Length: 439
Image (cartoon, rainbow, N blue to C red; front, side, top):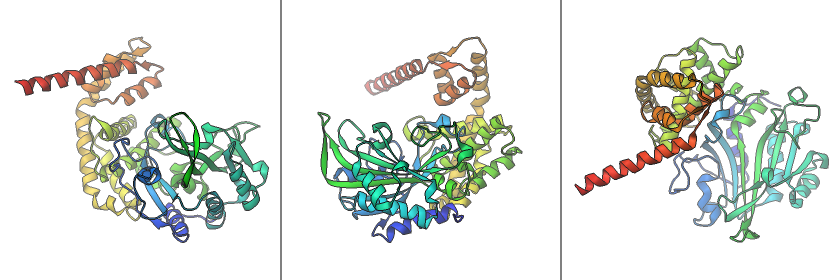
C-alpha cells in the first residue's frame, strides 16, 4: 500500500471516474440552494436531490464530486472518538438512470485495490439481506469469498426514503479491517461489531425502489447510483493510521493547536479530547464562514455559533484566553487552499468573523460560567429548562454546550423545559412586534 496525501487521494478518485465518463463538478456550497428542507449540506448527494427525484434534468447522467459536508447530529462524539467530525469531505460518484450495480461494484473494487493498493484480504462487504443481485456480482464477478460478504437488515444496509414517501433502495458497504490488535473481543466481526477495528470506507447506494403512501415498495423505472466515501477515513486507511486526526488532512491543524496551548498530544486523554475538538471545529467554522454563513441564533447561523463556542470553551479548559480561535485560520487555509481556493480568497473574512464572535462571547462567558458552576454544585440532579434558557438567552450558552458540561458532572438538563421557554419568548416577541405594527 503506497502512502498518498489527502489531496492525491481526492484527485485520484475524481480522475478515476472522469476516465469512466463522469462529469466532474466542484463541491457545492455548504448552503443548500433552493432546498428549504435542508439546513446545511451534509451528504455528497444532497446537492443532487432534484436530479434523483426527477424535478430537474442533470447536466450529465454520470457525475463525480468531492463534496464539503457538515453534520452535527452526533457532535457529542466529536473529539471523543478517533473518527467523528463536524466537517468532512465526501467523495462520490452518481448515476442518474445510467449504469447500475454490475458497473459500480467492480469499479469500487478496482479503485480500492488497484488505484489505492489496499490489500484485498483486509476488505469486507456488507449487503442488504434480500439483495441477491449484489451478492452475485461481489461473489461471482469480483471474486469475493462468500464468507466475506455479510447480509444485514434495513437498519444497516438500506437507504431512504427521506420522508414517508419517495425513492429508496438497498446499499452495499465496504469495510476495512485495521487489524487484530484493534479487536474489541474474541468474536469481534464486521457482522456484529461497530468497534474501531472495522472502518466503513465506502457506501454504495442502489436507488431502485419507490415507497408509496401505502408503504409498498415499487421498482423505479430509472435506477440510480449514489456512492459516498469519506476522504478522512480513506486517508486514515491509506496512511496507515488508526485515527483521522493523525492524517495529513488534520495533523497540521492539530500541531498548531498543540503549539498554542503548550500541550503535547497523546499524553493525557482529557486534554486530547479538547485538542481534537478545537482542531475539528476550527476547520469546520473556517469552511462555513468561507461559504457565507455567519454566527447567529437561528438555523445554520446557530449551528456555526454552537460549534464555535464549543471550541472556545475547550480552549479555555486548556488555558487559552479568548480570542484565540482566529489564529488557527491560517493553518486551516494553507492546508486546504490547493483544493479549495475560495478559502484563501476569504482568509481575512474568516478571521474577522471568528475574532468578532470570540470577543462577543468573552464578555459573557465568565459570568455565564459562574451561574453554571453554581447550578452544577447546588446538589440538584437536573438543570431546569428556565435556567438552561437563562444561560442561553442572557449569557450566550448554546443548549448543546450546557448539556455537554452538565453531562460531564453526571447532571441532566430539562431540554423540553428549555424548548417551552424558547417558544414562549418567540410568542412574546411576535406579540410585541404586532403591537408596534398596530400602534
